[in-house]
Length: 402
Image (tube, rainbow, N blue to C red; front, side):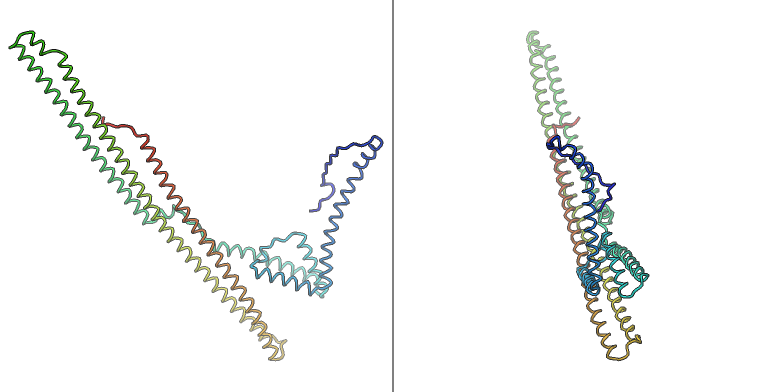
């Protein structure tokens, strides 16, 4: 972009050896001559750009028909490639050059300046209306992404959630019954061991009292020796320790078994949930594809109706044209019009088919990405559940009933 001189700031640093007798000349050169050269360089570039614009204008003025035919060919080529005028962002200089060229051509062909201005305004208005129409068609075929939270609100998924919750509650109740049964059994065993220990101590006490009444005092003291009582207590203590250890191992194994069962149940539930989500996602994607096809079919139908209407209107206008004197001329005009419309209609339908295929491919690609993301989420959920289970197993300690 060309800049005026006050907007240009240049800072040049040159480190070199300058003799003393040339120092004044160097200062004068950098202070006065160099800015002038830079300004001239900018002016030359601007002139070159303007000369290019004038060269294009001269070419257009020299052969207006060739210029217009080249513009029509360019527009038709872009139209065949599926590029609309609204998709092209023109530069200001090129738009000015095009406008000036069109004005000059209209003046040469005998058209007034007002007609050229009106044509330019109509062209600009057509471009402005074409852009919203294209945006409206894009938003028309735009399909919203499927959200998993919406799928989880489905009746089938809610029913599965209630079923899985019921299975979890039943498993908890079964585990509670098993814990209560083991706890009751262990408590009974401990009570029995305590009773046996009390009975044995009572028998020893009774035996010692009977022997003291019948035997010698020395023998009685031998019967009631503390070493014998300590030996019996040690035996009872050993039996109690072994019982506590066995009960602790039994209770710990039961807790580990319950953790494993909960992990397996949760893992199977995660698989069931994501399998159902996959089916619901597939059904929703199928519905989206059907809706897109219906929209494209409706658009194709509208296009065919518009083409038929245009063909009929063109034929009617030729039939009602009073400037056509002979039937042969009218037939020739109708034939040319039909050939032109046939070519144009074929290109329009071809572009619409390409556009429909593009929308379907984009939707299929998005559906594949959604399926892949769902599989990744399922795998991540299973890995997280397995990691929690392993951490719980590593952090587990021997447990017992209090």
